[in-house]
Length: 175
Image (cartoon, rainbow, N blue to C red; front, top):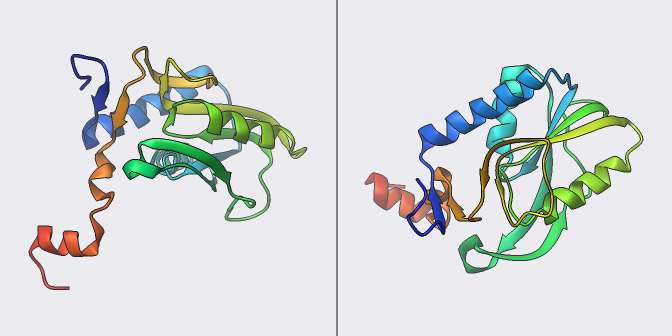
């Protein structure tokens, strides 16, 4: 649900999963065939996992991080993992790059530039649930374009800062 002022978008688990399914259908309907999925951790892990299951393709993971300060609301320096984790072999062929959103576009652009420098990748396309208007990068597949560039409140954020003690208190169980 987008707030009246357009500054915040709140997404439930059901809405989140529907977005992932819509993304799968967008990729499928394009007719493009890919060999592997590379998801960006952490935001792209859930969509990447579901797409990997739907398309029955191997899932690779690359850790990136730029949001740290102010409970993850201020973007800082982009950190990108040196290595990409795969079940077997190397990242190669036609690769679908998956993340949750194109926010500023900085992370996706940096990852795409790095991947395009890998000779084993013959074709690369990107897929996200949301793209903000302020993004400088335009993914190949987008479920929702957000003209007001709101802050997106995703359902799993309830765990940010909860900690195990908070979970124990919430669940009312002993450690």
